[in-house]
Image 1: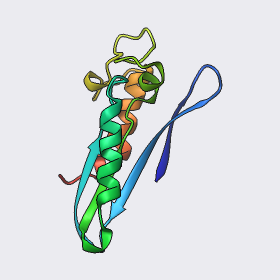
Image 2 (image 1 turned 180 degrees about the horizontal axis):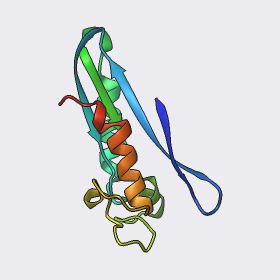
Image 3 (image 1 turned 135 degrees about the horizontal axis):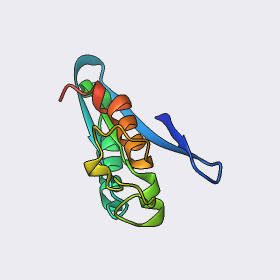
Image 4 (image 1 turned 180 degrees about the vertical axis):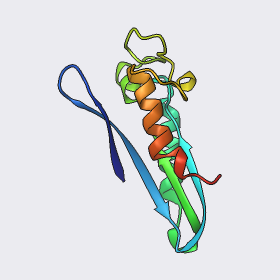
Length: 120
């Protein structure tokens, strides 16, 4: 598991993403999965963890990268969107954004540290 620090919250706590990797014994394609982009999607995080746990690296070529919780801010507040009052609170629609809102920073971290490594 790799911890990706994104930003320091107003209370001083660090908001981070946690990317899990299952790497096969042979080189091959890299599949990236991300779930829980909305705080109301907690079930998908459980499914991602089960998929990752079910993989056997000794029988794999390539790798599977999984981000079970893409929006820890929204999940903590059990809200669909990020709790800020930004112009782009919906993480699903923030990819490619260049703003400094929390959601845009999460989208950039996911793109940089997860999606950029995917070949599938």
